[in-house]
Length: 326
Image (cartoon, rainbow, N blue to C red):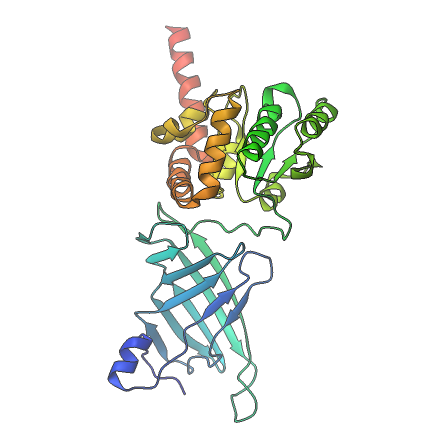
């Protein structure tokens, strides 16, 4: 039987009390999450507060995440418990440690078997988790096993500057850095771009995958590159920022408005050498771009949500109507 109150393993160890296993969550972002934990549920009508609860996540691309999250558990029925957890601090590889409320999760677990000498305790659990606030846990995108170093999403036409990206890949190859790319999109320049990749000797590094939804495209590369020569306010930029996808793009159209204080890191359009330098730096040391991505996501959530943008458009129309009538 579990105690009514449990505390962190290190405190338990020091006090000489029996330790309680900490949960390990694996394969979270591949569609089939697995939770490895002591499957003993809280006794019926008992309240279990883990005030120093630690959680370990294993994500795609060999990423790991350690979280501190107090958890309150209640035994609602025989062999059944419900809980609420609130992550307050997390540390992920290539991401600066972040504190503050990062979300709230609510779930339940039902225990099928009682642990014995020869049979382990088996249980099934389910949970709903809502990231929230500027310190919200970053979205996890499950990368495919054959994911490229970068992915580019856009129509295959001159304004999207896929040719500039291919030139940048050739420059990186000549400098000794082989970078693979997946290009998601269709358009009239498809044949010309494939010929360019062949001419610059990078055809084996570039995979043209045709049209696919953005969410699927995000799984095909470790970093998103949008090298456009011109844009308005591209939704792909907002979507990738909201999903915390590392992003390199150009200083055109409404993109600087989205990046705000980070606009200085945008690449000049049509400049393959500058783009190659940005790609090489990000691949050699992913940590700075990863942290900037989380900052950008917080800005997009605050300034470019559907509600905020709708209010802005309505305010602009209202102002225009007032001026017209006056």
